Amino acid sequence: MKSIVVTAADISLFHVAARELGDACQWWRIAQTNGLSDPDLSKVETVQPLKIPMKGLTFSSGLPNEEGG
Image 1 (cartoon, helix red, strand yellow):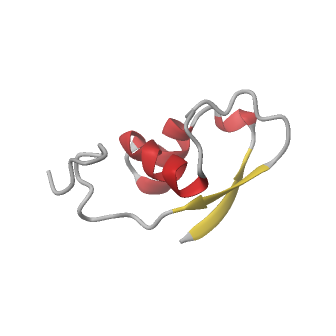
Image 2 (spheres, rainbow, N blue to C red):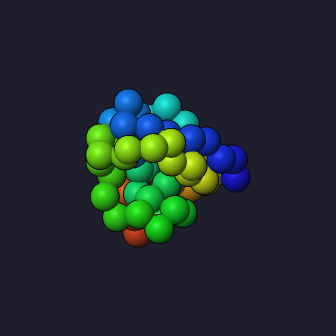
């Protein structure tokens, strides 16, 4: 697991997931790892640290509870 920092300029967890995991639909994995429920980062007022889960080979669909495709 790696850690990054995000700001409002990152816009949303969709953008972060696309950049860090290669799949915007896996935003929920970042949210779950960090105890978040809202993918919107536009209201972040300060630098926010986030833990990024490892890329999961079994998460091909990008949707929770739909592992393995």
